[in-house]
Image 1: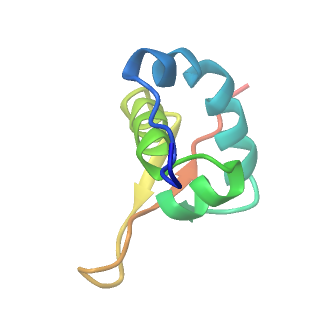
Image 2 (image 1 turned 180 degrees about the vertical axis):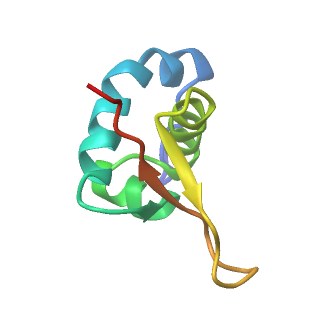
Length: 83
């Protein structure tokens, strides 16, 4: 490859979801973050982080916060499970 990052296939990305959602949750414990901020914290591509966060959102583990401006990124916060 010449300077381009290798893109993993979808099966590989989804296989890592279980591990990565714990890392995402840990990152969000410090406060809400955008997808690019989460990706930077994890050292992962934004496209992969988007899939993982959308899975967490679907099952109620994270929620998106209202945007202040229409062109802002959504910020996501962790939804802690009740004990």
